Image 1 (cartoon, rainbow, N blue to C red):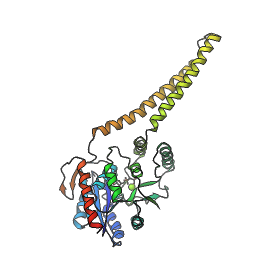
Image 2: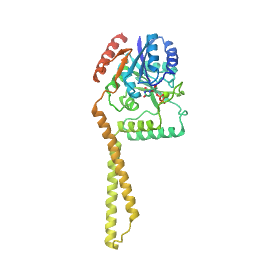
Image 3: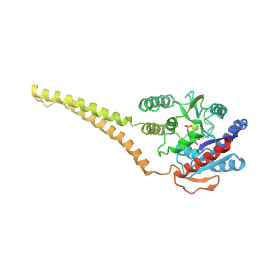
Image 4: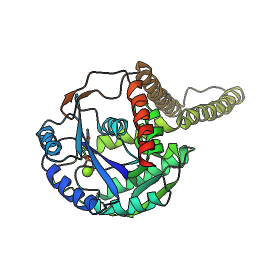
Length: 336
Ligand code: UDP
Ligand code: MG
């Protein structure tokens, strides 16, 4: 029997977890040909999330949980889940039931047809304000213009991935993760199926405009160096214009004398150039910051406990190897 692990990152989700388990297991129990496992990742929640997870894992055999040593963010929590997931495929879901569990049978159907990465594509963004929708659209246009890898639009983290996608994702251990881009980058056979985002069942979202802007910058700087190239081009263009203007000024002065004037022009040019310089420095700084962060080579998350057992830190490369072995073991088991 094939095994699918559901990876569920949770950050302060105490209100919704029991309901989540009930709703999702209602769907998964109906699919008798596949054994589903729940892997919750407690991402340093401040409320009773961990207690509820402990309770769930005691009550149900197919539930296990990882508890990170603090809040590392959803991206790191997802990677922890991918590192520890076992089986033939994984499904990543939000804990807040915004991702309808009724789609799981469809996803599995396409997976059985041979797709490696079945992702849910949001049909509507009606739950979001007009400004947020416009900004999202602008971001997608911007990144698909800048990046060589075509970015999937309006898909989130709700997706089913085959084991080989998971194994590939484990290799990509950059510390500033833009998972959406990483999913696209790994390639393999992708299938998008449309879905309507539900409103949150309980609790509240942790995202705000600031974190969305951050995410957008993250996305662009982690996927393309085109902004650096653009600054070079801009610098070149401005230099050429400056030289032309210089000739104009010099010839003008030679032919017609040099009355001291032109304060407005001077100011405009100075301010413009100052702006361009600061912007270019900022862009270089963004990339420098990324190099700085990557060069520290820190583990992307630390685990406090795994199913109640304390976990001592093992070097970052270890979980990858460990899980490769697990993956291979499963291969023998599940394809028998
Ligand atoms: N989440 C997490 N760590 C965080 C923030 C969020 O694990 O630091 C989880 C959260 O519990 C939820 C999922 O990521 O399961 C999506 O978060 P949220 O609903 O706040 O985001 P939105 O749906 O608004 O994009
Ligand atoms: Mg949500």
